Length: 50
Image (cartoon, rainbow, N blue to C red; front, side, top):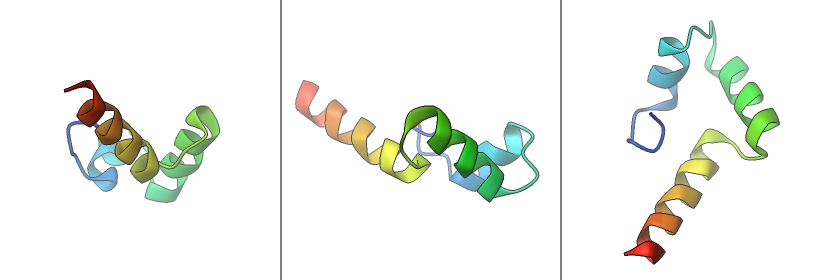
C-alpha cells in the first residue's frame, strides 16, 4: 500500500494500528527505514528499472 501512494495514516489504520507512530516504529524496526524513506527508495528503484 505504501508503494501505491497511500498515506501512512491510511495504511496504519487499515492494518489495525491505533496510532501512526506505532506503525512507523514497527515498520522502521522491520525494514530499517521509515515508511516515507522506504517509499522514496521504492520510487528510486522503479525509476532506475525503466
